[in-house]
Length: 312
Image (spheres, rainbow, N blue to C red):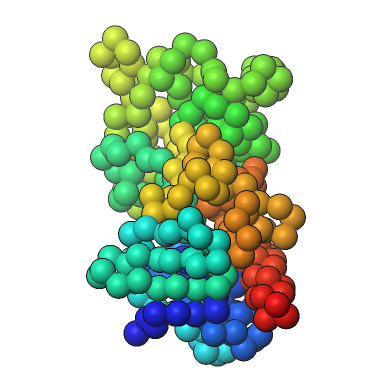
């Protein structure tokens, strides 16, 4: 059951939130981690994690999330299920969370770990082969595609940079773009054009993803209505991400143009006593390992803030 007041509320139970919760519990703070779904966040949708320190053999995303949850439970992290409809930060001295059931929760310090979600194609086969050939992170999954052809969907900086990175592993990388020119910055484009393992398919969109136990073919539809097929064992959908920020006061938090929250080196936002960590913050690298680290940093900053309040 969620109380009416806590010293610290951690909003979101992904890697950043669980890490923050672990540190909060060890610091003996009166805290709660509020999560509307299953603890673990986006990592639950990851088939295999091969780059998290301490697991030399790799493990499934579910196992990693489960281990994080068990670690939190060992220290009796207070994790509660609930949905926050609106966060009121108009008065920095009284942070108020308006819950979906009509109740309110007040706290002295708040850590935002609401995360982000990858934009999807919404085509047949995408959900079916998620984690079995459909990926949303080249840096995470590239080593699984050694010496096989893959497809990258997108034309921005991230898509083209990840395509270049994938050429270290894949036999061929086909960039599918719905326009006839890339949106990536010129120097990134130049690197891609100079890479003989990259080919471009212009003015086209993915119409379906097909295979059996994994991805085998990508069906395409061009702007003139013509269809074609590409053989590929992996497809990297890199068409942007959307922050989970609908409940947050973006203007007060000085959100960037994409809706992510800027923080300083201690994960402090523009509002005293409000920290943010994980994929909701404005940054270039979104990996499980740095989300967990940011959660720890944010909680230590929150603890310092709470100590200053007590001194007053």
